[in-house]
Length: 306
Ligand code: SF4
Image 1: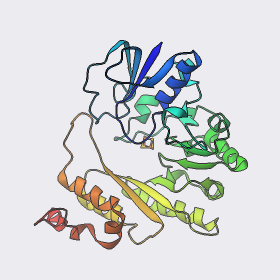
Image 2 (image 1 turned 135 degrees about the horizontal axis):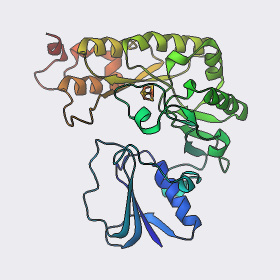
Image 3 (image 1 turned 135 degrees about the vertical axis):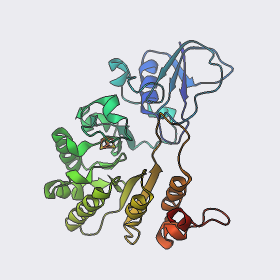
Image 4 (image 1 turned 180 degrees about the vertical axis):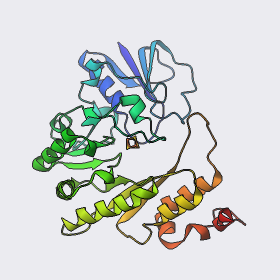
């Protein structure tokens, strides 16, 4: 059979589901390739992770079309025999031979209003052993767990990560509220690929992030590098205070994202886009207060606060 793949979001992050689908079919002797308009396919798999990206706009030339991913249906899941496959990393040639992607846990027990994880995956549960992700000598692990510190299984897997010497990035961020002195000691001993990421989405989390970073750094020879994920929503004064809080900390960088309400598309207020733009430009964030930021001719963000 000829199998076509479409990564509908077409972003720079590899699609784990498509890598598993490729592996499943190639093992069965099928030919797997990225979908090409002028070919005819037995099956085309379309994967869409985000609900705010456009759908694939062209006719699909295939006997069977399979659509999956949160962008189509938050309850869609891979069948277990595909989900259990080791990803075929060769469909993304830019992934180096030392890097692997996966999840140790799925789900989350929290219910943050901007997040689909609890509705999609339910409460947190064990999913994979880290050694099943680190296949074929791949020791650089991009782990997409949503709240691994909320799981005792997750904590025991972190102990295994340290014992094995894997280098990791929990790229969906950790919950700073769950960093106890014992957890901080563990996090201080992980070989991080780049940043330790925390969510900082509420005023209360400023304190928790600060405390977590302080405890981790106290267990290390030098401070770690941190990335704080911040949602921009609601009150401009609160967002301004929260996003500005770490401006003078050279070990902290900010990733800011306006809240996208899936039920009300295309309604992000201009101040939220401007604040995200300011926070994401590192040199601007460090050197300029948001109120002094001039995103357009004849406009200074101070005007939002009048
Ligand atoms: S803690 Fe993270 S994963 Fe859990 S609901 Fe909130 S944003 Fe989603």
